[in-house]
Image 1 (cartoon, helix red, strand yellow):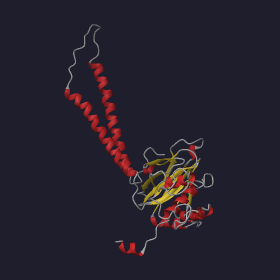
Image 2 (cartoon, rainbow, N blue to C red):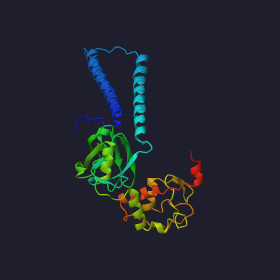
Image 3 (tube, helix red, strand yellow):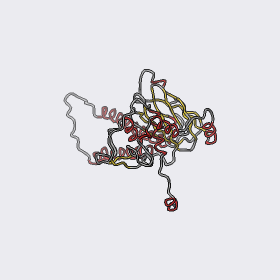
Image 4 (spheres, one colour):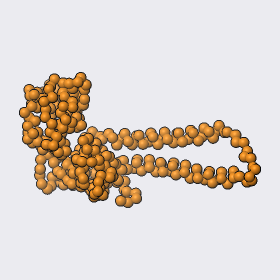
Amino acid sequence: MPLAPPQASTFAPSVDHLFLFLVGVTGSVAILVFVLIFVFAVKYRRRSPDEVPPKVHETMFLEVAWIGIPFLLMLVMFGWGAEIYYEEFHPPPGSLEIFVVGKQWMWKLQHPEGKREIDELHVPVGRPVKLTMTSEDVIHDFFIPAFRVKKDVLPGRYSSLWFEATKTGTYHFFCSQYCGTNHSEMKGWVVVMNPAEYQQWLSGGAGGETMEQAGARLFQKLACTNCHHPDNSGRAPTLVGVYGRPVKLADGSTTMADDAYIRESILRPAARVVAGYQPIMPTFQGQVNEEGILQLIAYIKSLKIPESPERMKAAP
């Protein structure tokens, strides 16, 4: 990996500017401290055994300066870093979502259209890309140096990061969290393509089903349709339109039907039961892997409430 990776994402310049600012400030302070140590050691050295040091008078200006200036610098660093941190955690609406599963020692990636990759990630240039990630075993960390983005990938949880590539080309990505003996082999390439080339790549090769189609097939295979009826007439609540909405629970609390809640409901259905229903759903732990869970979530996310003629008329 080069000492200074190329800047190939919208985040890269802002992260580099903050990094250079931090290096400049800390380096200047370190140089100043060492220079003062040397100067004071010479100027105020003890010249004879019976020498009595002169009395030192405090200076208010210096007291305020060495407290106020570092404080202001810390505020600038905190505010600057918080702004970048906030931006990196809020992908723009309409981002291209790609699913990532880390496993000792490979990265498995799947596009919404069903295209799958191992240790390679093809993305279009100039379009925000959101990675939804989880791990099948231990803690990993997805790191793309040229994009200046990295994020822990945790077993049993979903994490996400997003980026927008600004240059076509091929860039390394790594696992930056030591995850076992062959940790160094857990690496790959991000291939940034023009949008037309990306669409051509996406439509090439073996066809395959989309994430939603794979999730629908798995939904049928696991017999989820026996209880989750679209018209809410089954023994379990309907899943149509549930994603992204608040769900009232049996204990009186409310939770959001997001990726984490759906995953927990599949693996630990008794953890948070929907109000008005009995905890009769069996666990699917061991029957569906992380990729299958992501496919089920994609399918449930696609189950939207159909637009009624009245609502369509009311829409602007």
